[in-house]
Image (cartoon, rainbow, N blue to C red; front, side):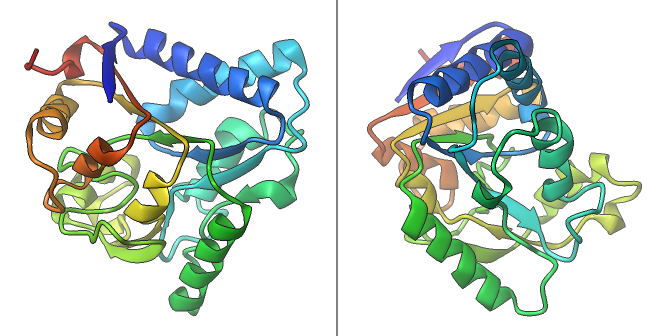
Length: 243
């Protein structure tokens, strides 16, 4: 595991966008694990710019999103389907839609959806590059503290702190879904390469805990210590206190 402070969110986002572009350019059949949220916004903006400038053929790229809220239809403006379409897939509309995979939280049978998504990852994987953010409580994906390290795709009850943190995207905290479908920790750790981004003062403690605390399900991100190819990129505000 290596951690690199690139100074600003803008520089770190551009660097990671370049890494994704290089992967897609050199390996046009790549499987990419994608994340959402404010941390990733600039990454996708820079990636779209690079794709457009170079008119890269992405028709054989396969994508797997980490998670989706339960109860939000794909067209809802706070769903991760909507986020990905608005920020990436509609901006560079040359991805093969059959190769875009995002969990569906707006289904009557969540157990069947969990099985379906897990089977897709298993049959089409492994993921070559997995993007991750990190929650203030150490969650990755929506795998909250206490999540089994052996977990595959599953339904997650979101913690109060996660609901509060995500409420900034909704009109009111009461509108934030209380559950999500999330790729599991075992699914994430099977990726060949993992890139984690963390920006801002609020993420500093999460990065400190990841680096200094023992591997424990109480801090889901610590599972990354068992992986041979993890890169962490931070800005000045999220840079760890440790050497």
